[in-house]
Image 1 (cartoon, rainbow, N blue to C red):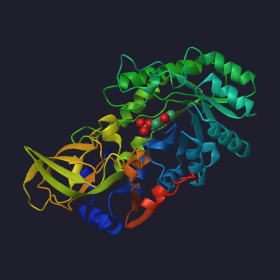
Image 2: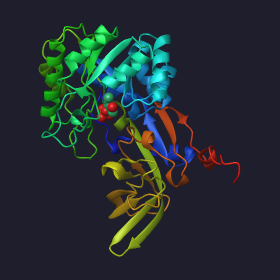
Image 3: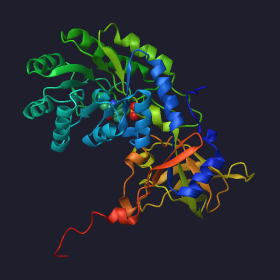
Image 4: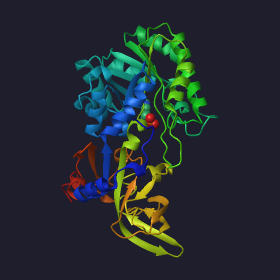
Length: 411
Ligand SMILES: *Cc1c(COP(=O)(O)O)cnc(C)c1O
């Protein structure tokens, strides 16, 4: 059985309470079994395609190892992610580095790594980046990121596909591909990523992107190995929301792509890890403010940034559910001195200090976006698989936060 979504209420309350008691809060819990299930569903939907996990969603070593083990490739957004992917045992032929305005150090690292592992693929999103790769003597596996120009007029959230920051304009792509080939690069693929949220509603935008990529692949005379149509497979952040119909997305993708010689590649990030993770946080403050009931917890925007950055909604469940308490409406807020540090309004069993709350869909872009703002140490990540559990990333201490301090010797 491999259900398309794991809801917050399906997590075992006693197990979560035990993990919080053992490891403290705030605590990220990531279930590797669920990561495997999500991958299996994706691989089944695209049996002829390549699944490249977008590592930036969650780089926990155990998550990377698990996905490498089941056969995923790793899509990397930086030199650091490439290093982590290789350290997790990813075969270089399954690693792709997608350079977005790459800093010098990232390109140096990528080219050095490609010298050692010529199977590595580097994706360039600007003619300028191709020049910089040539200057470094790189002539290996090159993929061209194109900007398919899909987004505006379709869906506000489909942001990167039409944002000039990402990729070369699709009209320029045929010439650039030929030029790169003539300059001696091993041109292996074309790539586009439309940004967040392929959902039932904006399948039209996805279709359009894929169809433009298919046309481009047919137009070029180069022998491309793959056509990569990116990630963005959505997950239901709201409890009542329907999960993505992956089979329908896969069907639409194949239809829109049309006949091409090259292999289809997809790059799911969120889809593989989001519902495999929860964030556990403990209530430390309960306060009535006029009509409003404010609940203070030990996780905030430095632990999970999505609500503050994107206005994102994450389901929250009190582990005190089932104790027969009445429920009330409460505003759940974090410990950061910043008015944006709010999870939102939730219906909770009457909150009491020390209650545990579980925040859903925290497995993607959770720990990865955590910061040390307010000199707050980042939380721990515990991975579970069946009966087993282990700390994958230990909790930071204030000493960790201060480790790089104090460089000015005259003060
Ligand atoms: C972020 C990213 C992804 C994954 O996006 P999700 O929404 O997590 O699926 C895939 N490809 C590229 C190039 C990305 O930058």
